[in-house]
Image 1 (spheres, rainbow, N blue to C red):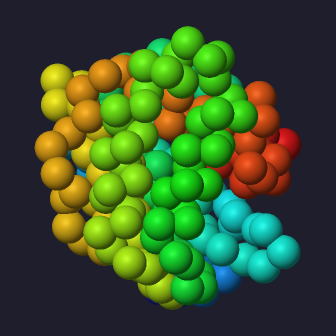
Image 2: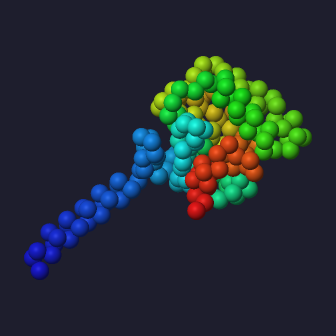
Length: 193
């Protein structure tokens, strides 16, 4: 009986260490946390994966207040949301901005795309002003109710928030729409098995 207390202590310590280690996962050297704080709310990780186009480009992470598996569920989910990209290689920012525009074109109706043009021009300027994104650089797209879409590149907020919810939905369609740039990344961030 007197050996039970020390043994129980060892077991509890091992379990606590295992749960602390489970709080992060490693994807291509990027530590993915199990939660993020956005707009004052702690959001659990919905899913994470690697964007691949011939080579590994970035680790994508999606944080939402409740589990979502579709674009519609993501948009309907109350509260803040975050899509985070941690780059694994050097990428020209202007070219990346153009790819985002192309991703929107591939996933939204023409009339919605027309309404998004001013916001897409702003996004292009945001990325263009940063020249390039390199290994370890982080871009976050945070939707904060009452504030709008806050884009942060390399730790610096890029201009004023984009307040149009339709723009946020169109932007998220790049990753979660009917024609995503990377189906495996879409499934990983939406935690679709």
